[in-house]
Length: 421
Image (cartoon, rainbow, N blue to C red):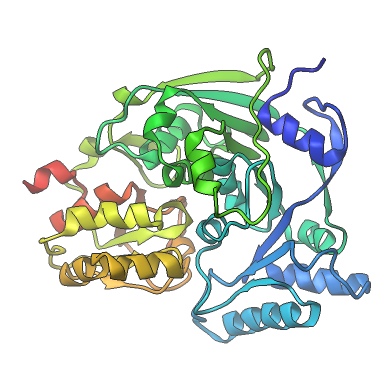
């Protein structure tokens, strides 16, 4: 009997094989196909060229307008309209537009559209987020998505897996963002190239589902094809009453083969930053305390969930953003906006001098709602800090957790919550 990892088990089931091995080429049935307002118009154009006149399953396609919405210009408005018209023409059940939408990788888990054991592809690299739910999810190109719209199938090369053992109790200011940045700093941007990261260990008791989503979200930042957590009681509790489809939980076989095993003692981690211009340039916050800032962004598919909002609000409560600092808070979904209002978090942000936004990817990719001018410096809870990622090519972006970003907004420079007194 072939011993398999979680990724191999999910791919085996969806390809109709009893077992698969790394390097094997397979064709799989898909549970969900995703595209957004940047990538969907390309996929839709390619799909229409096929001339088949029907999608494979209108309940298994999800369209999310999130990158440039509310629309920032005529081109983005046209892109959103292309999605809207496609959804209407083919009866797509899950078309999320302004007022009902949110950042896709926060929205889909929240709405129960992804569950354990699913195989999901999306025309966005951070589709790997859903591995937090014990799913195999990965990004693909728009042409692949077009074919998936038509057939509900995609081909894969079975990836090798890297076992990441998380142990110990993280300190209060150490979050999922610090864990994944620390891993990326250890192995580099190509350290898991076309491999599946499989997370396990006793630290999972202290890592919430939302923090697991943060960790899986940035799996692509070290080249991973997918990032998957071993399921536990937290996984089951999160999905219970939420998931639209039946969950199928997968654990690795004893004796499954891994390309590598990495052990991280979370009790020894400290708050870290990704320093310009790579997510792998990871150093402690204390090493960069004092770096002056122009802008702080709290949000994105990485850190825009309600736990992130609560963490930032806890730091900002009763305090003011430093003079000259622009602090932009972007809840990831309408539900997160609602909770921020109900819990008084929105008032904390506004009273602190922050801009409180409707859900959007916005500044993460230099889209809108916070584009940087030449020479400006930002700290952000987003996932990438490449040259020109958030604006002018001479600007700089530091990546951090919500608590560090919020503290830095008050200090007017990079710093720790402990410095606020």
